[in-house]
Image (cartoon, rainbow, N blue to C red):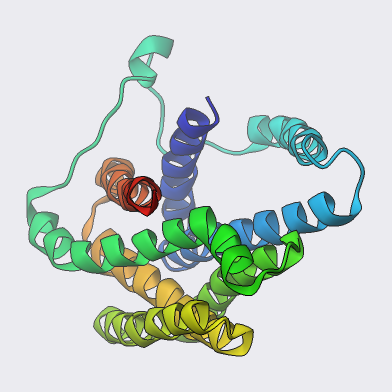
Amino acid sequence: MQGVATGLAASALGAALIDGSPARGALINSIAPMAGMAAGALGTAILVSYAPLPLHLVFVVLVVLFAGQMPLIWLTPETAGGEPGLMASLRPRIAVPAHVRAALLRVTPVAVAVWAVGGLYLSLVPSLIQSATGSRSHLIGGLVVAGLTSCGGLAILSLRNRPARRILIIGTTGLTPGTGLFLAGINLAAIPLLLLGTVIAGYGFGAGFLGALRTIMPMAAADERAGLLSAFYVECYLAFCVPAVLAGLLAG
């Protein structure tokens, strides 16, 4: 249920942000997932390490936050007009305009690589760190995940005015050596090397995501943005989860 809700919200809010301001909307769409994952990873690690009810408190906090956001949704102006019929409005619509397909295919390898690395970090890195270093601290795992996504956010802020192609090149250039350094740090049980790899990979993570988004979204007309953004997120979320599940299966 949380996954369905996240998908509905991400595509609708993302399209509304771009409708309101194409330039700032693309920036917020890029940086919000990074900020959210950093806050979630670090906040959860702190609650699990230092607060009572470690298996339950984080979900209580989320329920309170979501409940507080619900009234704000009713105050948010509609940007895409309206159509009669509740059920019709819930029908999934994923569409890639013909003139955007070639650009989407070109950035797909970058989007897949970026989100595959992100999924592996969020799912496996905390347990990898515990196995490699012998540390049982949940905070270290949370800091590493938050480091990846925080550096991704910094990349988005620092590169937001660069051309999309240059951002993509920077993203792929950072992601490859950063991931290699992280793997070396895991194998050598060297936390400084592991953290350095995370910082570099995180910068590539954010740059790759921003570059892919900036390449395709300006090409879509106003009535095409929601469908295109939905298609892009389907691609990213599959890259986010499938490699992580496969890695978990193969690790056994």
